[in-house]
Image 1 (cartoon, rainbow, N blue to C red):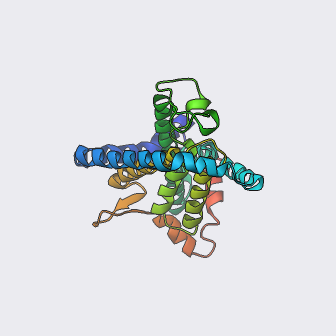
Image 2 (image 1 turned 90 degrees about the vertical axis):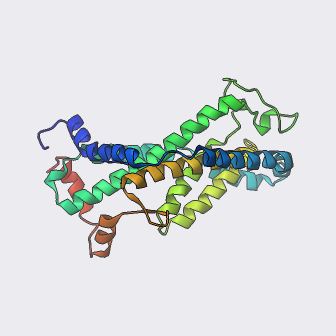
Image 3 (image 1 turned 180 degrees about the horizontal axis):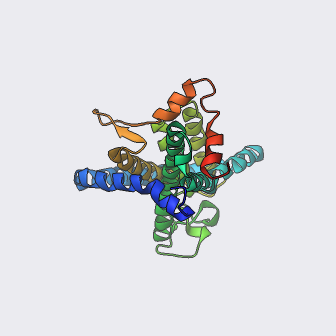
Amino acid sequence: MSGLTPVGRVRNNWALAARRLRAARTRQPPVDWGRFAAIVAVGLVLVIFTAIFYDARVIAWTETAPSGVRGFFGWVTRFGKSDWLLIPTGIIAVVVALGDWRRVSRTNAAAWWEIGTFAVVLFVVVAASGLATDIVKPIVGRFRPDFVPEGAFAFAPLSLGGYAHYSFPSGHATTMAAVAVIAAFVPSVVTVPIVIATALVAFSRVMISVHFPSDVVGGALIGIGVGYFILRVMADAGILFVRRPNGMIRARFGVLRRLRRRKDGLAGLFPALWTALGRQ
């Protein structure tokens, strides 16, 4: 593999994952469309309920909040942008894919495979959920709170006008909910902080009057749904996630966990990456 071009390395390093995904697709049971329709219906009912009973009231309440509180949430809301995740995870995935992992120990190669695969999963979950949101926004065409003096039910369906009526669903809430799903299935010390950050960012969109509460609920449901679907596909393929007999999905970072238990076990990862990229 050391004589391959960078493109050749990428193809070889991810060929195994592609084969596993294809094999998993043939093993998957048919989609239960009735159950899927029921879940979507429940989600729509929740969104409509929130819109009817809470949207106008909550927005009116936020307008009375002190300027310092709104300023704080204006700062918090910046962390819900997908770029914060897409750029670093994309870079990690590309760097790992370019490595010639035959030049390092199997343990370090396997550890970086886990890191690179997780970066790809996170990238795909955020990108796919964001794409779903971007498709729904112009179809619904809901006006944002700061553009609708007539109330919470102003729409311009199938409109391509842009920001003013791209309120539903909230893209920030979608992104953060998708990340929270992954955090929930990869238990660690950062799981609770990520869930708290998700709630703060989602709430911030309402506090700064750029989304109604139902927009946030809709975005969160999309993020959770897309994230869980992708994790199920990965678990069925046995790539980084596994499905237990009781149906629960759990992450499988076996090599990284073993290295973490060793003294200075993780210290060799970056030298190994340097070597795999042909720097020694």
